Length: 340
Ligand SMILES: Cc1cc2nc3c(=O)[nH]c(=O)nc-3n(C[C@H](O)[C@H](O)[C@H](O)COP(=O)(O)OP(=O)(O)OC[C@H]3O[C@@H](n4cnc5c(N)ncnc54)[C@H](O)[C@@H]3O)c2cc1C
Image (tube, rainbow, N blue to C red):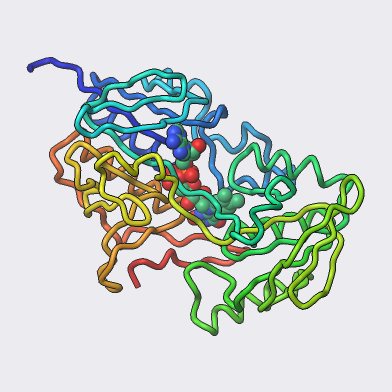
């Protein structure tokens, strides 16, 4: 219908979602663009959360865009509302406030969550997470009375937390069940360089170890026992067993999933009006010859822009993998490696 205002809904206002909203607005000045996010905060860069702990940035300093930006662009930002269900046939989403939101095209940009290892789930109330601003502020509040942190895991969340807690004056032990320090695994030579960076910085590295059990030892201290029987006292305990795209709400939706939402080079899912981008999207990896979830904020931004352009256009823009950028981990640039 000529002049009909198209409705775009974006689930998840992270780097990918915000980039997509802007790309849609640039293509279609008349469209209705709604960004829905379960977090109450304005959209922010997660890779800067460590700076919030260190106090080198405050909450405003990590925003992707200023608070007025979305109003100025005519992008409706709905914070603190979780999408519980997506109906591909009905073309609507169902929100946690019982509202139905209709769409013509939708982007899934819900990111990923940390997985707590199965054998440590029973200790969840005692474990710190490091994925959101809320998690970060909780960790920050523990620091003034903390002497030691035990972090179980690898990859940029665990390593970034190790770095900032060390710089905050804590003794930090990093427990890694295998001898690989990153996701995906680095070649042995690079892994060794990372190992040296970590130990030279003063982090106690417990490789080939795991947390066996945790006891609460007084008001604020935990007694952490490793498989070897060694015990450590700590005020901050973190345990990650990897990441999973936050796509559980899509299981009965008809959108085709593997680990994440399977998309093509246009960021389009197997359902025509559904697109996905960022840490929850799985894209064909030409070298691995299989689908792959590609982590990292530069990739999320590029994917969001490509998805937004395609949602509002005619599927002419393909993801250009050569333009994807490296990310920094423990002060060192690594490549998000789905193209090598
Ligand atoms: C501590 C930390 C350090 C990092 N360091 C680096 C780094 O150095 N380099 C790098 O490249 N990357 C880094 N990353 C990863 C980077 O932040 C992510 O790759 C990037 O944020 C992915 O963007 P995204 O838009 O796909 O997802 P996210 O930024 O995760 O955004 C997804 C949004 O979706 C919302 N959401 C989820 N489910 C729902 C739902 N059902 N309904 C409504 N809203 C929902 C979430 O609240 C969230 O706001 C780091 C991440 C963390 C946590």
